Image (tube, rainbow over all chains, first blue to last red; front, side, top):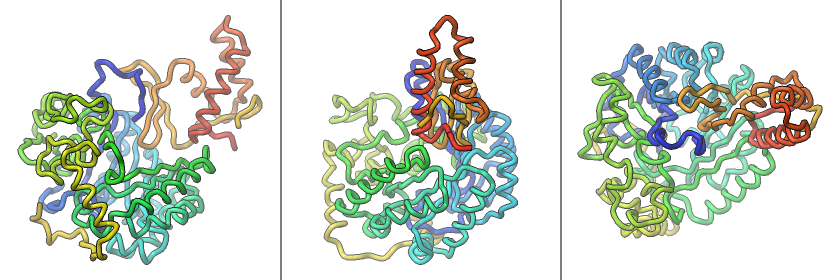
Length: 373
Length: 93
């Protein structure tokens, strides 16, 4: 949210966006899914009334946007009720979906109830490679859903997660987005957490692939200005400094997981030693303000060197806590993606592996590996 | 390019909302939002697809008297072209 300075000051920790993870259930099995590896252990524990309350309490806190996501939010049959309540609260609603399973009628119903935007994922530009990543036949259906979205007058964001197998096809992804009249195209490089970290050797691109795709995206952004917004999200493994993950921990984004936990991002509950609180036990506003877990990495007191004395500490907030933990074992370490981090060699080694390593097979998102990590 | 006879309309993906906390209007669109100053909010409210930029300038000149019409027109065009570049304001029917 680039709300600018106008809302600053006391609003430092005002959440603008609620990421409502309605379920971890999903018909697809994407190899880079950002859900936790042990997702089957997390049940859908928040009922319709619970989510309606979350929407109201989030709006009270200052939230103006809701991402309805998962897993696949469409598998919940109370999505209509949530969209209607969000509309009543004048919240901007973005449905983040694989497009499976949905009918045209249901999309029309959601539009009539006030849905503002549909963000549809396509894994690649043809059925073969797309279905290979998704672990299920889905590509043709996704294109059908994209056409329905536009026919119904809903804005369409097309989202393609990029990795070494499809980065060279970014020109074709852009052409597909144009053909579907997408209003917005997110070319989002894989972030290596969850299943993507598990599959990093098979997914991490080379520097050359990335540079070429970035140049293609930049050209498309100029050419399509005003018609289609083109975003290119660089992977952390090829940057000099880390990104401001979630705009800083517990600052602008509020995530509620399927089991009701209030989190600063969708991966934070994989960090050890933090007691996350549930919307089922306490009002959202109290948790947002007082939860020791949410306060653990707010501000700068937790920062180690080189972050603590770094000029960029208020720009990138030390990077991603989850990446720090999953790569170094210490959630309070400087994000290894930072070239100044003492553990940056981990990233350099992964890059070398991407350049020189032998091909490896994917491990699909599945319930069977549930206990790992 | 937005000109005096263009009839700008807010893009379907954008939504205007009053924000009680900042007491400003916000323009919301996918994954983003911007806080509008009062003049910008007045312009956006008039982007109905029916009024031309000239109509908008006339209305705002009345509202913001005694500011000169030329200055207002310049500001309106500058703002709307910026919004059109971001795909937030449409010029086609």
